[in-house]
Length: 262
Image (cartoon, rainbow, N blue to C red; front, side, top):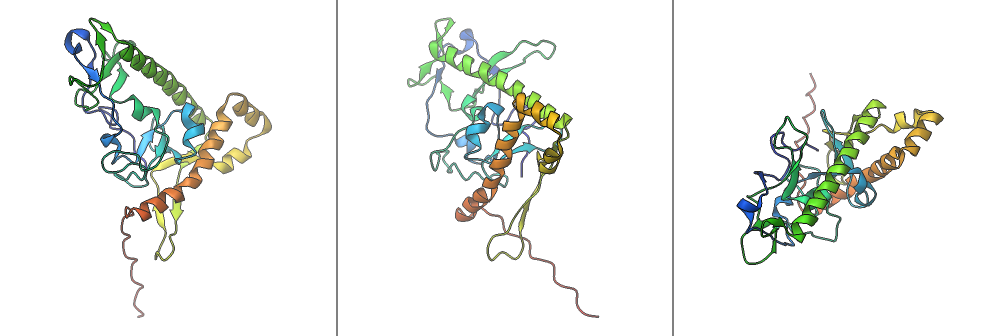
């Protein structure tokens, strides 16, 4: 149900180039009400600073495997997004995760041996170009007000992402993350739909924590985030209902026939 972005480039990014006035002095940021790159994406990385608002719209889960990250589920199956139409327009008013709003810009480490981060962009994106419309990224050889704002947003996102990584590591240290499974039984279906391939907080383990442990995770802000995550899981059935309404639920394999009597 939930997968991590490719290891070579982050989710959505097809290419990366460092922004430089000498090379990109004519580039402009293009505004758009569409996000075609999001239309077939079912899971988007989420930061802990977004949990409170995101849990009103999406189930929040954690990606499977190592280096787990929180994900906002926009659909339950690969290639399915019940919030965005085929052109990339929101079907209803909905919170758009910061990871999506950051695209096509990103702070990236261009030299693995250095800690320095460089503001880059995806040159293949339709959200930046040299057309007459749009906001210039450079004013001569200096960053424009628009680019300064983009850099500030990316820096804030990077800080939030680091706090999110620390949060997930703490959950893993406490042994609270387990492999998740959700069963949805639609009316008239011969068998339930099972969704796996993600992690979630173990409610039983959470209940077993002693007072000192609970007080600690409450004081350091972990407990409210865990509660937001657990509450959000009830939306999974709502997402399934939207998929059903939009005709995006995969067909079930026919149940195996009962063995014949000897």
